[in-house]
Amino acid sequence: MSGDGESSAPPVTPLNLPRAILALLLCQLTGETTILAIRAYYPEIAFPGPVVGMALMFVLLVWLRGPDAGLDATSGAILRNLSLLFVPAAVGIVQYGPVLREFGVTLALALIASTVLTLLVTVGVFLLVARLQGEDRE
Image (cartoon, rainbow, N blue to C red):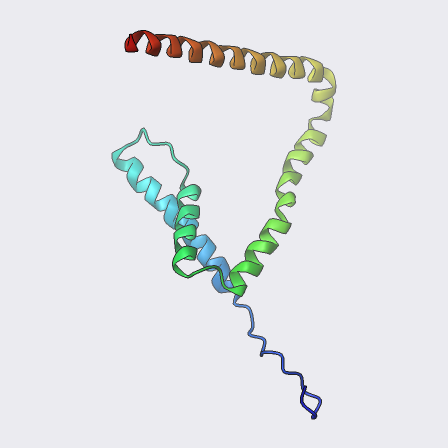
């Protein structure tokens, strides 16, 4: 410690939050644009653009050897407030409360029955394909 009362802490650099938000949005926009351009020639491709943007951000972070402090702070703030995105779903449940009260049991039974049916059909198709592939190998 120096005798003049000053600490030897490194200087604090200000966070560049607008640059971090711009980087996140540009990666997402690039992903969306890439998928839209690919779909112009191959319409059967149904890959989400934000996932391509996320992969682009990953490549960018590997190239830069990790996020800077601004990107780290910005992404942390977004993740901490992610639960706010579930508020519209909760509002919808409250808004349609009378409908859920009247048909809730029927909707729940339909949901359970369709889930079980989907699982049974999936297992059946898997077993059929496994049997057909087993016959092809013999």
